[in-house]
Image 1 (cartoon, rainbow, N blue to C red):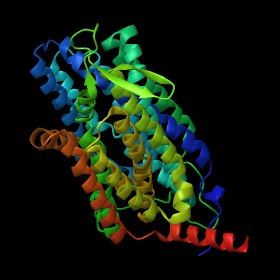
Image 2: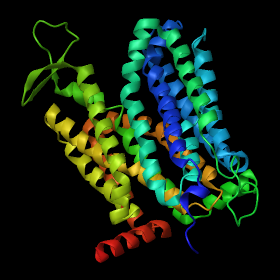
Image 3: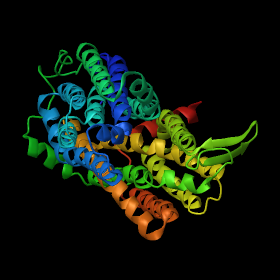
Length: 448
């Protein structure tokens, strides 16, 4: 069948991508905006014992992960029936309202309940990925999802910095209200500037009038997606990829603490990390040293996400994703024996360079392998995998670090990634769309 022209089928897809990116950036900026300061807010709600603060901090995170894991597939299937734009708006509005209400909470149990409800009604990234996959020409899906992922990395980098400034200037409670206002502005932009072909636009000439949407029930849609072995394998791979970030997160600050030493003239608790690189020699506070590591990971991951589409078109998305997983796994292993902060920083920067390609690449494979009209169901399940990793990863990483030592965490997750990459290479086939793009590229190169 001849390929249909891009513009008549997907009017305004570039504009859509811009405003969906803004929605994702604001949505995840909000998560990183206030939630790093949840322990301080719990103290403000009357919990003063350190162990109880730690317990309630973990409980609030687990509550969100649990509810999102359970509800994301349902929201995704509803998106296939009633529209993906509506589900994206629901995620932005739901998260914004609940974050705003958190700012007036009077007891810690109310905060835990609100965090659970937020997981049930939010799910910004899954809704955005489904909307992009449904409103972008399939030939541009890999590129678009890579661009979308840069919104995630940017929000992860900037959220704590901006949130810390707002909290210091306005106060903790006020920062929740400020964050809710950001969500409201993003929802307004999405409502007015994002379209969904097949719902707001006329049918393509020669096609039946009306929306080009699936008409199955919620569970039929989920069953259809889950029956595709290719998608099931990629969902498993996606879980391993997200697990690789959440598994090591609890122990990274502890590893940096091992590199720190007490510097004369500072307070007893202000140990410093010595840094000596060309052009700079000095001692950083542990908090600053930790922030630099996360910032470098965010930067290299963003670069990788932008490079994904040309790399996928050159060597294939399956090869790009599984190769990145294997290399990232190999790079985790030296962290097992890293002897200095600079070595630790450089290897994590390299890990971020390959991790940054894995998630958008896997999402592109899922989008290209999903039956038409089922994108919401597929990305609902993908969001559930991410939430499950957020739920399981920190706990599992903490247990491994407690029983086997901190460095063992890096060795184990490295082996998990290598295994996932090898299994993915054996079980995943390159979608016909991407295989066709690779063949066309080779023909052009041969002709040139």
